[in-house]
Amino acid sequence: MKKRYAGVLLPITALPSPYGVGTMGAQAKDFVEFLARAHQKVWQVLPLVPTGYGDSPYASSCAIAGSPYLIDIEALIAQGLLTKEEAEEYSCAAAGEEIGRVNYEALFYRRIPLLKLAFSRFDRQVPAFQAFLEEGVFADFAAFMAIKEAHGWRALSTWEEQYRVRDKEALGAFLAANEDEVLFWQFTQYEFFRQWGELKSYANARGIEIMGDMPLYVSEDSVEVWAHPELFLLNGDGTPAEVAGVPPDYFSEDGQLWGNPLYDWEKMRQDGYAWWTARLQKALSMYDIVRIDHFRGFDRFYAIPVGSKNARVGCWRDGPKEALFEGKKDWKIIAEDLGILDDGVYRLMRNTGYPRMKVLEFAFDGNPEHEFKPSNYDENCVVYTGTHDNATFIEFLEDLDEDTREIFYRDLVSECKKAGIRFAYRREQVNDPETMQRARAATVRLAYVSCAKYVILPLQDLLGTGAESRMNTPGTLSDRNWSWRCPASAMSRTLAQKISRIAKRGNR
Image 1 (cartoon, rainbow, N blue to C red):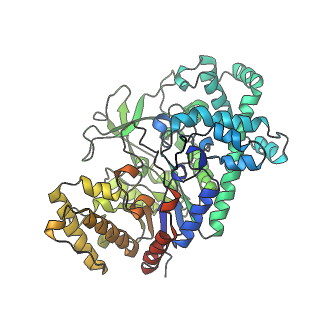
Image 2: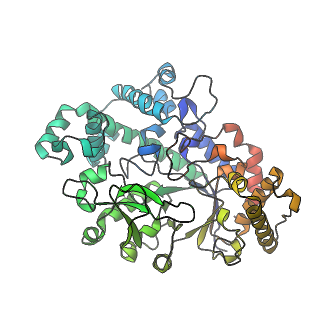
Image 3: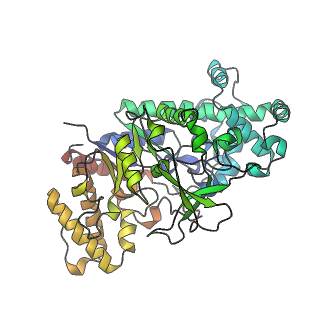
């Protein structure tokens, strides 16, 4: 019998922990134990990179660096680099707050100074740190962040030209004059990856694989654009000629204007896509499985003129297609193939063989042929109730109008009968909150018994929480995005036992 996996989607930032944001510390290990008790085999995290514009981990300053915000402060206290009092003084949690939401503004102004204080007491001659520096993996990142801070954290496009274009003499002089600052940013990566290695080993030892998440694009204000401008479609002054996004669809009449620079795929083809291969190898050295966001962009990508206010005007251009993935078909990659699909995307998916994604929130629309319906799956897929970009399942049901919600229930009843799952409702119960929770529970069971190789459910949908716990609303800027956190009490033994029973019934 082929192995069937079950897992939970929860970003590290959402973990309960002191000082205002989830980290790679004790609470992360507690969550691993919760997963093990729940008979889960996968923990899917969101990108671990430094957050960028709008606090999004999908708009990072570096595609391979780790976020300093995720460094566990308790570990630094244990190393003697900080005191408890200092950590509390720089805490990003409100006084008396049990859990709260992530306050990224507070993190920006308090967490970096706290880490600098820790670094001031760090022995830079430690052999492991010296070996880390010699590897040189994060030399560009450290230089970029030091120069960025010297420019008041302004975007790359506003820097003094000598630094923006990496003038060798000017850059060398800056690095020599700011050695401590550059070494500090190296230290953030040294400590991040030390802690990450410990956490991943802890998870793997308990039978839990980590699924990482890789954004397709990088930010215009990033190390990659600064250090490797030749890999992007840029104007002579280094600004993008066109930017990324997706056109209008059923969910957005303006489409989505992401603003990322586009890759020069022809240039990348000339060296066999070496940069992308190295990026994927780096990711697979960090994670057991890698989910690539917006995978359809490898077939064709949407190009929007710079200066556009929305994504209504743009055009599709060809990406690298299967050529980028030659020799990589056995790599443990999950393809996020949601959105506007066409024959080219379907062909790319067939030829790479990577598992596709199915989202149950969108499955029950009255169309018996809908590809997200479990009865229409093949096993090479990953089923979700929803993703980090969707409403929680309860919020989704609440937002449906009454007629659409009844279609959803009627369809769900039909699918449940095929799978041997009990779910029924009466017409007068369509708007009943209890019926919504029963529908959620039935959908969770349906996911587990489906033929899909992977079932990955957001923790919110296992808890049955509503709009207050939504992770992100695409196309919006809000302090509600990326800031939800889960109280420790929610990850109870009772919930773990309940999930375990469902997993075992689904042979996962």
